[in-house]
Length: 158
Length: 289
Image 1 (cartoon, rainbow over the protein chains, first blue to last red):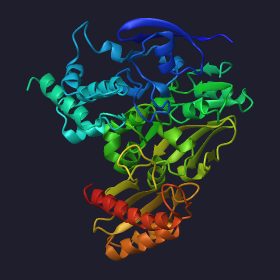
Image 2 (cartoon, each protein chain N blue to C red; image 1 turned 60 degrees about the horizontal axis):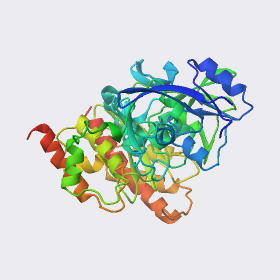
Image 3 (cartoon, rainbow over the protein chains, first blue to last red; image 1 turned 120 degrees about the vertical axis):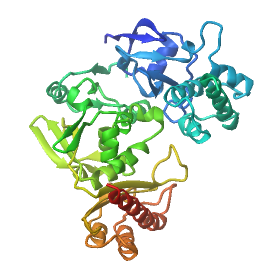
Image 4 (tube, rainbow over the protein chains, first blue to last red; image 1 turned 90 degrees about the vertical axis):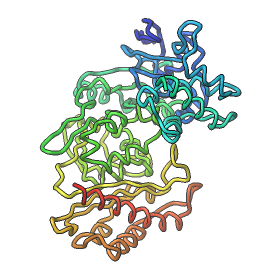
């Protein structure tokens, strides 16, 4: 059975890949494109570790098939820093020690960036709501929320 | 899964033909938030996936005869962020907002929430209370049925083989109408309803309720429309006495199961409480428009 040929954009670059129908976008990113920054947590859309944006929308890459990416523009954690320069969210996660094992971190960062694009000045509650689809089992949420609020302040120039 | 084929037809006719040619081994793919998990667990092993998101009719939200029609594959986020739709049917949007995380709602469709046929589906009681009608396309053509006739039990629908829910229609609503959906869950986010309640009501110029619909979720094998609870409101100012009768009627209509989320007894009690609170919220909205 022939594989599906898919053309998409990943972090602004055009990519072409072959995938089986059952392969998720997460599997394609990690196993075909070797972009292993996006993590698999639960694999069932509950934990948000595999969060990416597709045409600007925050999604779980485990809940989308690779073949559905045809013509779409995907942003992953690999596209977040500019060269060696970290995104303000990444910098603030480091400063606030908002991570321990790090498995949830790429998804947290992608979800946080998506939140701040829609709402540059969120309340603490809005940050918590915006990250409700992302589970962290070690740091807890307080430092993550603090880091996002701090990054939002900096990004607003406040 | 390696043998599985993928097709993305551009028309409903092509989608129906693909389903008809697959001997029942095809599945419709909209947001995939239920289907991909069922495939991953091995519960579902389709030979063909028919991705319907390339079909314009299934992906659009349009004003129609003073009401709205939206494609069954439209994502939850697209409906939530559609300002006019959200203003017209706030209770339906209450239900859609509960479907899952932001990530899940970016993919999950209301048509999928309906056709996955979970008794606890959050958008379904709200749609039924709103009087939503499903437009169905199949090998024998089109038909329209009220949404309450589609769920047939956990994971089961009344759709014939090869039929697809193409769109959902919400009728024009009179002035002084309001709807609301509330659910009870132990967590505030990312949880499955222990009980859900949708209420849609219309007041006359004097503030008397002239029509109402009440629907409960997660208290039976499918969403339950409760005409007795609606009747408790009609002809009243939706006062305390009417709300008490509504509560009692809602509890009486429950046929729940015991599970880890709640006992039968608990669900029956909570259904009355949630129905009352949803009616109060719907009333407030009706008074404000």
